[in-house]
Length: 168
Image (cartoon, rainbow, N blue to C red):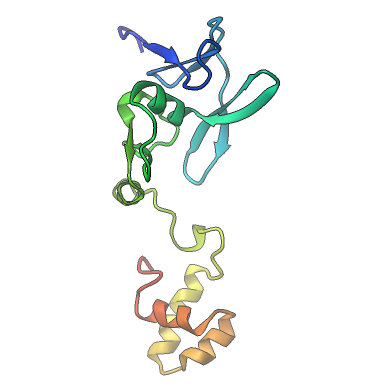
């Protein structure tokens, strides 16, 4: 940050109590910086801070505070995009409002899309997907494979046809 001027604006809805900077930092109006706490996420982290006023306390995502203060309220149907794919980089120049599809495209282009067995509710591992394709190619019925691997027949069909688990 050397040589750059950090701009501060009030946190929307908490004006007079908290400020947020274009560098992704949050402080009390008294200029005391708050410490962000990372909310773990697959491949990186989103930073959040706990802000309070008049007896209530709530967690806020820092990237949303930055965009709301410097760009404006979140347009309907939009979400925050981290343009470099790093969810921990909350510098204003790295943030933009965008559609869910734009965010999905960003994850694909940055290689941060969670796929395969990294998906939290995945029932199969890479080796099992390969076995399903191998057995299906050898003529084993999809219904039989579904029962053997404990999944639905439609999933076996999508695996064999490379609709699911394309990357394997």
